[in-house]
Length: 196
Image 1 (tube, rainbow, N blue to C red):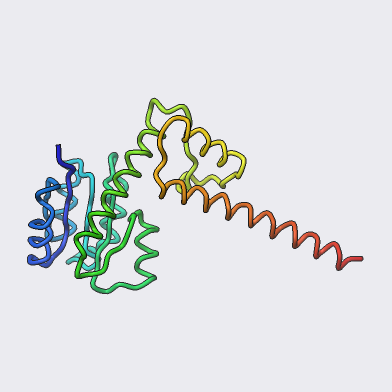
Image 2: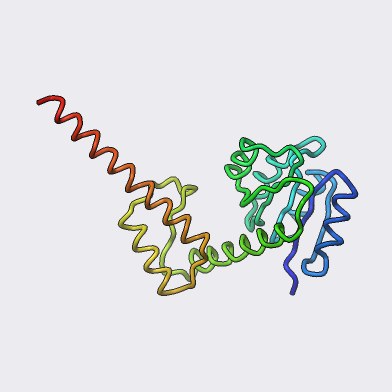
């Protein structure tokens, strides 16, 4: 069974071009604005949402936020002709897994979608109802603890094969926490030596 993809873009040539390029490998749906997209998202479960940043009435950022609040949210990718670092960062904050500039490179898009879908599958396996443990993520509101992080990584290796992206993310969170603690210890030592 093909994975489902919803393409949202107000430019018909872009919508149709992406559909034509991807319909052999995906079950492709299209929408011309956020309202039509939400109607589809609320009636169907999509694996991937590929949305333009600039849409009539509601931008792609808001659409991503709304899509991520669904019971079974799709993997979200934002595309735009107005690419900037600020837009990319905001897209990630809203739940997008990646950001593409137009014109879209189809090969790159497919690699991003497959990587994101593999990560999503891994998260379902790890955090699903039958999982033996839960992974703490920044969204859970809990601070990363290096001891529990190493246990999660060890547990994951024993139960599922971890994607490189997931491993890299966990490793980065662990490194950030270690560096924060080292900085605190250095600051305490510097403060102690100044008081002597």
